[in-house]
Amino acid sequence: MDAIIKLLLHFAIPTLIVSVIFIAILNFLLPREVRTIFKRELKSYFTSPVAYVLFVVFLGISSTLSFFFTGVLEGGEADLFLPYFQYLPWYLVLIAPAVGMRLWSEEQRLGTMELLLTMPLAPWHAILGKFLAAAVVLFSMLVLSFPIVWTINYLGDPDNGVIMAGYVATLLVALCFLAVTSVVSALTRSQLVALLVSVAICMTLWLGGLPHVSELLMNLKGGWLIFWPVLKLVNIVGVMPHFTELAKGVLGIRDITFFITFIAFCLFATSVAIRLKRA
Image (tube, rainbow, N blue to C red; front, top):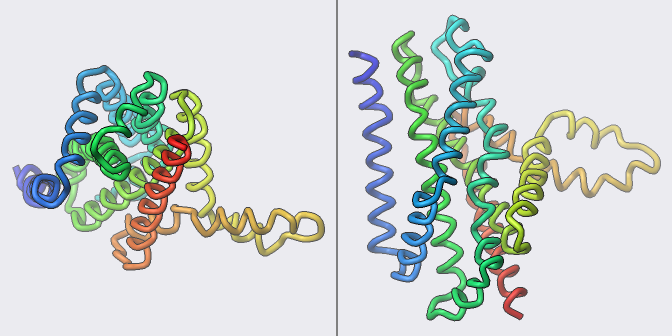
């Protein structure tokens, strides 16, 4: 019973508050055009098997691996970072592009992109509406992973504030990967190409923050120095260090600013890609 009360107080109520705030912003602050695109896209996810398959895959993989392979039950500590949160971005490298691969590729394949862009709405209305709909799908996946939170509260007395920080960090990483996929999807009409390219880029963004990459930069010599600018850029935009800090409960302005700036830049790049298509 105590575990259920903790789940309600520390996760159900904050989730409800976030949802109410999102709905309020969507209905009262964002233009009607954004709401129209958002509702259309969200409906398309749940009227096809795509969202349901991704829900089952994500929840099945994350829960199964956490309970049976990462030792969350045998660790002896009421903590989720090592057995759970540090692995979530690896799953999202595939799941987030799978959610976002159809954002613009499907419009181009069906020939409806031109019709969409000739409607009385600005490109950013469509970009934001589509992105928010896909973001809700990813948010819902994380919300439905609550059984593991209930389990860890049942087993011990964890710091639920840190666990919530882990979910916030994971959501921000997922939105970064989704924003990257939005750009790639706007550049191709093939969902498969969008998926594969996005997975490769997201994997690079995740691995780019590894300490080994920084060490490699310091040790480059001779002709290998030609790769220094590329490796340095990958290291700078690597999301792992920012995720790790947030997931451990260190809510730094620098890390949050990084995620917000990264997502905003990718959405801007999506608008550039769409304008190039229109030209």
